[in-house]
Amino acid sequence: MDCWICGAEGTTGEHLVKASDLRSFFGKFSQKSPLYFHTKGKRNIPVGSPRSDRFKSKAKICKTCNSATTQPYDEAWERLSAYLRENISQLRRNDRIDLSRVFPGATRKSLLHVHLYFVKLFGCLIVEHCIPIDISPFAIALRTGIPHKNIYLAFGPQLEHPKRKFAGLTPVDAVDRDGVSVFATWCYILGDIVVDVIYSAEKQYMQVVSVVIGPMPQIAPKKHAALRMWQSGMRCYGRPE
Image 1 (cartoon, rainbow, N blue to C red):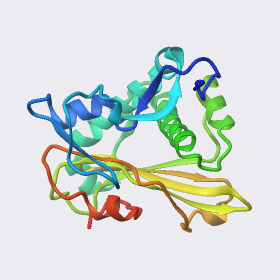
Image 2: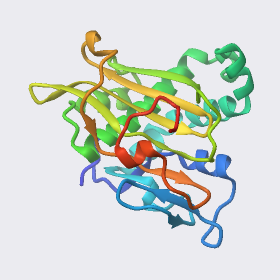
Image 3: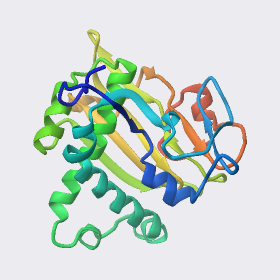
Image 4: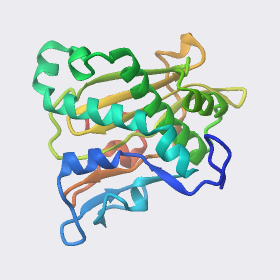
């Protein structure tokens, strides 16, 4: 499979939950003390390494795109992710954060890089699940370092503190018209933190969600029944049922 970003030979899959998030959020895990991976079809699959292919997208990217091209985007999200989790109490109280404290002296550029990190993840989901959205603007944005004009991000805390420690992605919900998705959304969840990733080609669809596309995995440190949003393919804005 070719790299969907540049067309070179694809050699690896992107972590759908960033490896640094897995390590910092769950701490060390191993074959003797694994995390447990859940999908719609399977529950409680032990995984002993953050490098496991179970954590990666089946969409392939090349070595250059995985490192030199997109590494600044990865590093920007790693920094913001850590800050959000360290300051979750402030975020709950004030419903806002001062991003200049996260990225002093380079706030605008760094936030663009965070945007592009989620553009990369979204592109991997589109390719892996054959979602009918044109992938070329995603690839161009990543190669040139410009924002994708139809991608929006919203950051916030879970509405309630999760009863169990978990990380994962929700399903992609989309509105299709004439065989093309004109609106789609999904959430990246890391404990208390939720990132809502939105694609909207037409503004009137910003408040509308219909067709559910492909349930995404959940990762947890203990065996348990997966949350209902993964069992049923429901979308979630941060409140597990």
